[in-house]
Image 1 (cartoon, protein in one colour):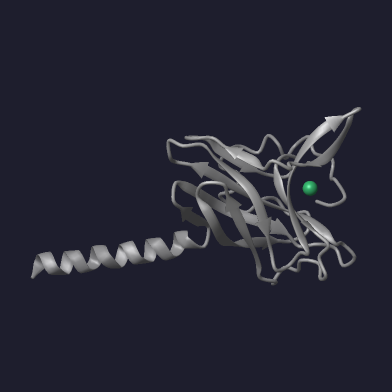
Image 2: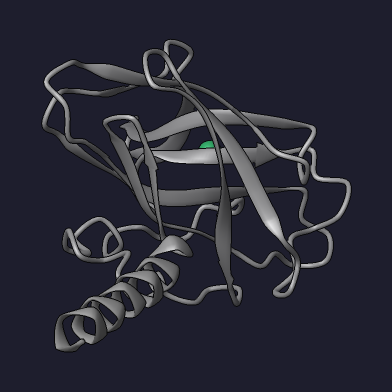
Length: 174
Ligand SMILES: [Cu+2]
């Protein structure tokens, strides 16, 4: 009897733990995506960035090669770099490498998924999902946390350190 009761308690813990984690962490084969988020946009905006941490727990390199979303006519994979002293966004037409064992952070000022041609700006209570396409792992649809305009990353997103947030002025689209 005691053992049964203990097993039941353990099962309940497992289930509630999984529910709490599921909102922020997604698993697709050897790819783990945590704390995907975006910011609510000003009324006239028609572009914005999506951020997350992607971890490759496997022994094989993978690559984020595409993305789509019901909220945007087009979703691209972007990086930011400095050209002639000006920080600008650039599309990664070959996708974003997620090497074996690596953790790649998509964050303001760096890599991001770019939502373009939004018919409706992202609002705070709007459901925002994005389908990510990986070269090896395949496709997964995830839900993004929406924070207010200009708000910092949600809890957990900055686990890798927020160094990239600091020097970024504020690109109009982000
Ligand atoms: Cu961009």
